[in-house]
Image 1 (tube, rainbow, N blue to C red):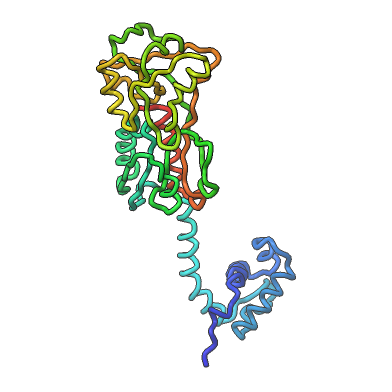
Image 2 (cartoon, one colour):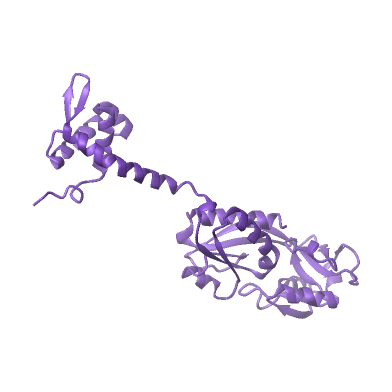
Amino acid sequence: MTKDLFNTLDLNLLRTFLVLFQEKNTRKAAERLFVTQPAVSQNLKKLRHHFNDELFIKVQTGLEATPKAERIAAAILPPIDALYSALGSLEDFDPQTIRRKIRLALGPQVLTCISGALVIELKKRAPHIELDLVQWTTSTFEEISNGDVLLGINYEYPYVPKHVKQEQLAVVKGCCAVRNDHPISDGAATPETFSKYEIASLLIPGWSEDLPIAAKELKELGLPSPIGFRSAFPMAIVDVIQRTDMYYPTTDLFPFDAYSNIRRVDVQADNIQFRYPILSYTHQRNKNDALVEWLNELLALLISEPQ
């Protein structure tokens, strides 16, 4: 029976063989392999036994390869070079070459504000990616777990499954949106002023379902916090505040420039920070994935500098 030279070989010995073939010297080979010279000699002994050949003969200048060693080198160098190139390419991430479908789940406060810019940037930087954008729901963590969603983007959640990795992308500042002719005419107002009007609140699954954040903050100040309207759809809230005296507690992520009849009103309150981290959520198995890292960088840029 012919000897199985592959399955019975410790593949780590092939590197020793190739370095010896290139250097023709056990001392130089040991230096390149970061091992001792006796360790190289011991591996050469194993190689000789495996291939039933001396492989390298001592000569005055060092070592000389046998005809069989020449044949072995000629046979294994092309696949070894190909393997080296393949492994090297794993570190050379190029979004232009990615051909796959990805699904991102964005919180409604993010989905409405950066969707257009995200699609444009992906078309430009990663033209072969097929993008599905969906809204964050109560099942998003489960969809991240089973692989249906690659990345989720939302506010910071107090409870996150252990197998979900989170990374902060940016911090947004709270403010309010009102119609141009709203009774609050200044560019900033106190919580006492806002408490006179009803809140049109964004409903974010799993984050502000019980009570709007603005209402909680007003209650902590001992102020009224009437809620006039709640929706998971920002466009519904935009439509409502354009027609009523309600105000929409939002952040500087909101695209005010896109609505000529809506303006920003900041909140004057020294004892409230109004700063909210935006995080990405993905499965722990993706923590070193080059595509996920690249998407996080792109999303962080778009959130920090909304277009």
